[in-house]
Image (cartoon, rainbow, N blue to C red):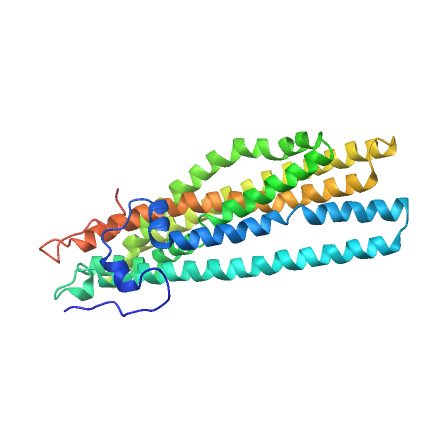
Length: 345
């Protein structure tokens, strides 16, 4: 029994049919992203550059508004600066809206192509007269579940680190230009996180890989109606344990990040307030620095989340490619035991 992939004019560089006929999947997630959406990644990166290019302007306008209000009380100037602040914020968020919608389209297109590709492989269950029930369970898991996070990552793979990294550099650069000692605050904020984030992420990756293998086994067991008794409960308990481990590690990481963030804010308020009190810097500069540090937290957190997702998706993609290779080259005996469900390397 054969089946094809429906022709699809999603205006992507290649239709789903061409995606299936385009040869084997690249071996890495980076290769897949570039191969399937290279042009879109360039356009998304350009939009990201526009967004982060505007990120420091509101801080400077805010500083000038505060200083003008305290020093000269020039209401006309303050109103013009406030209008400029609103215009820049509107422009930045408008471009960001377009960026996010475009990202979503690229991601969903990638999810659809991955699912259609798996659906059309010669070794999938519906493409054979006598499908293996175990492989059917793996196919269901791949099409409905595993393609989602992989394709979802495609839309943010290049634009997210560029956007968030650009925002970080723009704000840190502006604050350092405003007051050079702020570079020390940035180090207080960022450097400790470079110590604890990588080992915690490796712990998450190991649990994510183990969870994928167990869920494949559960999918196969459900198809074969072998989903009762202590064996199934052990699988589900293990998935629960792995998920709880991931939650604990992730939220511990978030706690440590928040602690370092508030520590940097405390230093900025103390040191900046003291320097303003003795007349060394302007009050508007202190306000801009504290606001800038506040704006570092979100892009840094988003950048860490992107790195976390990239690490997990790399593991998922590698297992996805291995399973797709086996489905593309099915064994002669369709009913034989298959290693697919185990997610083995």
